[in-house]
Length: 229
Picture 1: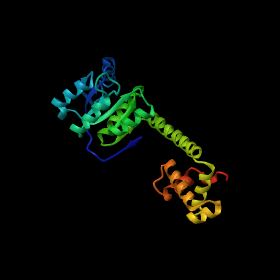
Picture 2 (picture 1 turned 45 degrees about the vertical axis):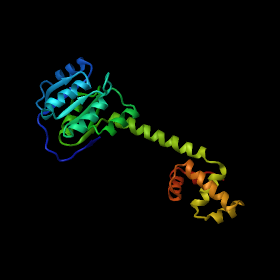
Picture 3 (picture 1 turned 180 degrees about the vertical axis):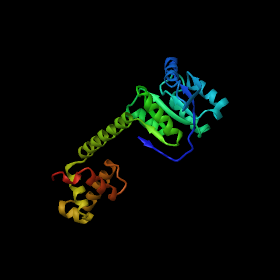
Picture 4 (picture 1 turned 135 degrees about the vertical axis):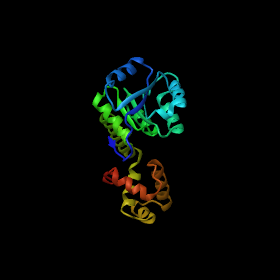
Protein backbone atom coordinates (compact mmCIF):
# COMPACT_ATOMS: atom_id res chain seq x y z
CA UNK A 1 0.00 0.00 0.00
CA UNK A 2 1.53 3.28 -1.09
CA UNK A 3 0.55 6.83 -0.23
CA UNK A 4 2.49 9.58 -1.95
CA UNK A 5 2.99 13.12 -0.74
CA UNK A 6 4.94 15.79 -2.61
CA UNK A 7 8.03 16.02 -0.42
CA UNK A 8 11.57 16.73 -1.54
CA UNK A 9 13.22 13.41 -2.28
CA UNK A 10 16.35 12.43 -0.36
CA UNK A 11 18.97 11.39 -2.90
CA UNK A 12 20.83 9.32 -2.12
CA UNK A 13 18.92 8.01 0.92
CA UNK A 14 21.30 7.96 3.86
CA UNK A 15 20.55 4.79 5.77
CA UNK A 16 21.08 3.41 9.25
CA UNK A 17 20.41 -0.33 9.24
CA UNK A 18 19.61 -2.04 12.54
CA UNK A 19 19.50 -5.80 13.04
CA UNK A 20 20.91 -8.17 15.62
CA UNK A 21 22.02 -10.53 12.84
CA UNK A 22 25.16 -9.20 11.17
CA UNK A 23 24.66 -11.52 8.22
CA UNK A 24 21.46 -9.68 7.32
CA UNK A 25 23.17 -6.30 7.48
CA UNK A 26 26.00 -7.58 5.29
CA UNK A 27 23.47 -9.08 2.88
CA UNK A 28 21.60 -5.78 2.52
CA UNK A 29 24.80 -3.88 1.88
CA UNK A 30 25.88 -6.44 -0.71
CA UNK A 31 22.46 -6.41 -2.37
CA UNK A 32 22.40 -2.64 -2.77
CA UNK A 33 26.10 -1.91 -3.09
CA UNK A 34 25.82 -0.65 -6.67
CA UNK A 35 22.66 1.40 -6.18
CA UNK A 36 23.21 5.14 -6.42
CA UNK A 37 19.91 5.93 -4.70
CA UNK A 38 21.02 4.59 -1.32
CA UNK A 39 24.01 5.13 0.93
CA UNK A 40 24.62 2.93 3.94
CA UNK A 41 25.95 5.43 6.45
CA UNK A 42 25.77 3.46 9.70
CA UNK A 43 24.87 0.06 11.09
CA UNK A 44 23.94 -1.23 14.54
CA UNK A 45 23.32 -4.67 16.05
CA UNK A 46 20.92 -3.42 18.73
CA UNK A 47 18.35 -0.70 19.28
CA UNK A 48 20.50 0.74 22.05
CA UNK A 49 23.49 1.08 19.73
CA UNK A 50 21.26 2.61 17.09
CA UNK A 51 20.07 5.30 19.50
CA UNK A 52 23.67 6.13 20.39
CA UNK A 53 24.44 6.55 16.70
CA UNK A 54 21.35 8.70 16.24
CA UNK A 55 22.38 10.93 19.13
CA UNK A 56 25.69 11.62 17.40
CA UNK A 57 24.80 11.47 13.73
CA UNK A 58 21.05 12.06 13.32
CA UNK A 59 21.68 14.92 10.88
CA UNK A 60 23.37 12.43 8.52
CA UNK A 61 20.54 9.86 8.53
CA UNK A 62 17.38 9.92 6.41
CA UNK A 63 15.95 6.44 6.91
CA UNK A 64 16.30 3.69 9.50
CA UNK A 65 15.90 0.11 8.27
CA UNK A 66 15.18 -1.90 11.37
CA UNK A 67 14.11 -5.31 12.55
CA UNK A 68 11.46 -5.57 15.27
CA UNK A 69 12.51 -8.59 17.28
CA UNK A 70 15.81 -7.89 19.02
CA UNK A 71 17.15 -8.73 22.46
CA UNK A 72 16.95 -5.90 24.98
CA UNK A 73 15.32 -2.81 23.56
CA UNK A 74 12.98 -3.80 20.72
CA UNK A 75 12.63 -2.31 17.28
CA UNK A 76 9.29 -0.84 18.33
CA UNK A 77 11.01 0.95 21.20
CA UNK A 78 13.55 2.29 18.75
CA UNK A 79 10.83 3.58 16.43
CA UNK A 80 9.01 5.36 19.25
CA UNK A 81 12.19 6.99 20.54
CA UNK A 82 13.21 8.04 17.04
CA UNK A 83 9.83 9.62 16.35
CA UNK A 84 9.96 11.44 19.67
CA UNK A 85 13.52 12.74 19.34
CA UNK A 86 14.04 13.00 15.58
CA UNK A 87 10.67 13.16 13.78
CA UNK A 88 12.40 14.08 10.49
CA UNK A 89 13.94 10.60 10.24
CA UNK A 90 11.84 7.97 8.46
CA UNK A 91 11.57 4.33 9.49
CA UNK A 92 11.19 1.25 7.30
CA UNK A 93 10.63 -1.98 9.19
CA UNK A 94 12.11 -5.20 7.82
CA UNK A 95 10.68 -8.20 9.63
CA UNK A 96 9.62 -11.81 9.13
CA UNK A 97 6.41 -11.21 11.10
CA UNK A 98 3.11 -10.35 9.44
CA UNK A 99 0.69 -11.36 12.18
CA UNK A 100 -2.06 -8.77 12.76
CA UNK A 101 -0.91 -7.90 16.27
CA UNK A 102 2.58 -6.97 15.07
CA UNK A 103 1.21 -5.04 12.08
CA UNK A 104 -1.11 -3.10 14.38
CA UNK A 105 1.80 -2.17 16.62
CA UNK A 106 3.87 -1.04 13.64
CA UNK A 107 1.02 1.11 12.34
CA UNK A 108 0.55 2.64 15.79
CA UNK A 109 4.27 3.40 16.04
CA UNK A 110 4.00 5.64 12.94
CA UNK A 111 6.71 3.84 11.01
CA UNK A 112 6.58 4.92 7.38
CA UNK A 113 6.95 1.43 5.95
CA UNK A 114 6.85 -2.28 6.62
CA UNK A 115 8.42 -4.96 4.40
CA UNK A 116 8.84 -8.67 4.96
CA UNK A 117 12.42 -9.91 4.92
CA UNK A 118 11.68 -12.11 1.92
CA UNK A 119 10.86 -9.04 -0.20
CA UNK A 120 12.91 -8.58 -3.34
CA UNK A 121 15.44 -5.91 -4.19
CA UNK A 122 13.05 -4.01 -6.47
CA UNK A 123 10.38 -3.72 -3.77
CA UNK A 124 12.92 -2.62 -1.18
CA UNK A 125 14.21 0.13 -3.45
CA UNK A 126 10.66 1.16 -4.30
CA UNK A 127 9.79 1.38 -0.60
CA UNK A 128 12.85 3.53 0.12
CA UNK A 129 12.03 5.81 -2.79
CA UNK A 130 8.40 6.25 -1.76
CA UNK A 131 9.33 6.96 1.83
CA UNK A 132 11.97 9.48 0.73
CA UNK A 133 9.24 11.24 -1.22
CA UNK A 134 7.27 11.61 1.99
CA UNK A 135 4.95 8.68 1.46
CA UNK A 136 4.36 5.33 3.14
CA UNK A 137 4.96 1.80 1.92
CA UNK A 138 3.42 -1.32 3.42
CA UNK A 139 3.87 -4.55 1.47
CA UNK A 140 0.82 -6.21 -0.03
CA UNK A 141 1.34 -9.39 2.03
CA UNK A 142 1.38 -7.38 5.26
CA UNK A 143 -1.78 -5.44 4.43
CA UNK A 144 -3.58 -8.57 3.15
CA UNK A 145 -2.85 -10.41 6.39
CA UNK A 146 -4.03 -7.45 8.47
CA UNK A 147 -7.26 -6.95 6.49
CA UNK A 148 -8.08 -10.68 6.59
CA UNK A 149 -7.73 -10.58 10.36
CA UNK A 150 -10.05 -7.57 10.56
CA UNK A 151 -12.64 -9.34 8.40
CA UNK A 152 -12.43 -12.46 10.58
CA UNK A 153 -12.81 -10.33 13.71
CA UNK A 154 -15.86 -8.59 12.26
CA UNK A 155 -17.46 -11.95 11.46
CA UNK A 156 -16.70 -13.17 14.98
CA UNK A 157 -18.14 -9.97 16.45
CA UNK A 158 -21.30 -10.42 14.38
CA UNK A 159 -21.72 -13.98 15.64
CA UNK A 160 -20.97 -13.00 19.23
CA UNK A 161 -23.50 -10.15 19.20
CA UNK A 162 -26.27 -12.47 18.09
CA UNK A 163 -25.31 -15.05 20.70
CA UNK A 164 -25.12 -12.41 23.44
CA UNK A 165 -28.72 -11.30 23.05
CA UNK A 166 -31.68 -13.28 24.35
CA UNK A 167 -34.74 -13.91 22.21
CA UNK A 168 -36.60 -11.21 24.13
CA UNK A 169 -33.77 -8.74 23.61
CA UNK A 170 -33.75 -9.45 19.88
CA UNK A 171 -37.49 -8.79 19.82
CA UNK A 172 -36.93 -5.44 21.52
CA UNK A 173 -34.14 -4.49 19.12
CA UNK A 174 -36.45 -5.23 16.20
CA UNK A 175 -39.22 -3.10 17.68
CA UNK A 176 -36.80 -0.27 18.44
CA UNK A 177 -35.77 -0.38 14.78
CA UNK A 178 -39.46 -0.05 13.89
CA UNK A 179 -39.37 3.21 15.88
CA UNK A 180 -41.80 2.03 18.56
CA UNK A 181 -41.78 3.92 21.85
CA UNK A 182 -41.17 2.25 25.19
CA UNK A 183 -44.87 2.25 25.91
CA UNK A 184 -45.68 0.75 22.51
CA UNK A 185 -43.05 -1.98 22.92
CA UNK A 186 -44.43 -2.79 26.36
CA UNK A 187 -47.94 -3.07 24.97
CA UNK A 188 -46.83 -5.21 22.03
CA UNK A 189 -44.91 -7.65 24.24
CA UNK A 190 -47.30 -7.58 27.21
CA UNK A 191 -44.61 -6.39 29.62
CA UNK A 192 -44.20 -3.24 31.70
CA UNK A 193 -42.43 -0.09 30.41
CA UNK A 194 -39.91 -0.50 33.23
CA UNK A 195 -39.06 -3.99 31.99
CA UNK A 196 -38.57 -2.59 28.48
CA UNK A 197 -36.20 0.05 29.86
CA UNK A 198 -34.25 -2.63 31.74
CA UNK A 199 -33.94 -4.74 28.59
CA UNK A 200 -32.86 -1.67 26.62
CA UNK A 201 -30.15 -0.90 29.18
CA UNK A 202 -28.84 -4.48 29.03
CA UNK A 203 -28.87 -4.46 25.21
CA UNK A 204 -26.84 -1.25 25.06
CA UNK A 205 -24.32 -2.69 27.52
CA UNK A 206 -23.99 -6.03 25.70
CA UNK A 207 -23.55 -4.45 22.28
CA UNK A 208 -21.34 -1.64 23.63
CA UNK A 209 -23.67 0.89 22.00
CA UNK A 210 -23.62 4.40 23.44
CA UNK A 211 -27.09 5.32 22.22
CA UNK A 212 -30.21 3.91 20.60
CA UNK A 213 -29.05 5.44 17.32
CA UNK A 214 -25.81 3.42 17.55
CA UNK A 215 -27.84 0.32 18.40
CA UNK A 216 -30.07 0.74 15.34
CA UNK A 217 -27.01 1.19 13.13
CA UNK A 218 -25.47 -1.95 14.63
CA UNK A 219 -28.70 -3.90 14.15
CA UNK A 220 -28.78 -3.14 10.43
CA UNK A 221 -25.04 -3.62 9.97
CA UNK A 222 -25.05 -7.08 11.56
CA UNK A 223 -28.51 -8.16 10.36
CA UNK A 224 -29.89 -8.41 13.87
CA UNK A 225 -33.27 -7.35 12.58
CA UNK A 226 -33.39 -10.38 10.30
CA UNK A 227 -33.32 -12.79 13.23
CA UNK A 228 -36.62 -14.60 13.43
CA UNK A 229 -38.87 -13.81 16.39
